[in-house]
Length: 315
Image (cartoon, rainbow, N blue to C red; front, top):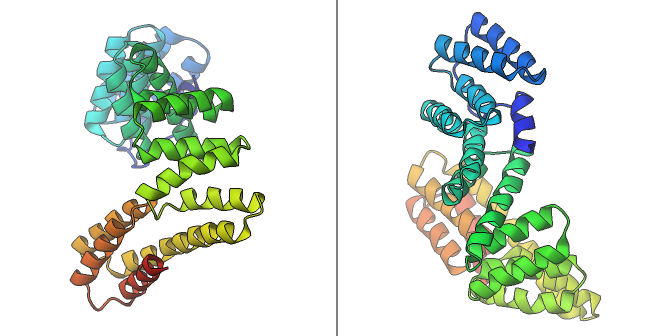
């Protein structure tokens, strides 16, 4: 329902679609009024007219799918949405609605893939709707396949978003049990325990994250706070200082990206380094930056970034 309200409010994709002519725009206005008045048959007829007048405009197909879905014509709605995405692959609303339609038809794994694709571009209300719908899809999948760690983690996310922390914790433990060596599930479990006021228990899981991902800022921050709360000032400050040092790498990375923007290979390496840093990898992040500097040896920003990373590695 959240997604449908977003669609009905007229939110648009990030990349603008082809602009329809004045007659088509007037038809869309009539369509929206009919839809909001509950006149589904009229809205569907108007959507057909929009598609006929502007066959290259994806929003007409999206509106048609919205109405078809409410009329229970899921296969027809799916076809309309696939046509919208053929015309504009980055249309966030179309992809989110397609995921929901697939989910309603029981095609859960394909629906999950569509939700994940949408999340790469969704922002604001659309992103919140995507996360909630993704979590519900994971919950359904978890009922079918309770051994799937990803399903349990998805369920953890939806419970956490809705403020049901005990249920989120139970799902987080299931995800970790299914994939005990996965640092991401350890991080989710540890972070959730911190939120629930159980820092001692959280520290065990977060230490495991740091063994695998020593440059994970969040995994340093939470143990730091927990240690300070217990009175272990020196160890707590050590973790918090490391978290702050890692955060300071982000603006240095941005400066380096700006400086090498015209060198595609170096820029690609820096973007890879950013992703690796966000995941907490140490040596791999430094290697990506070193490779970028080999391509742009005269870059002062890259030199500053690499110096900061080397200082972190030695401290």
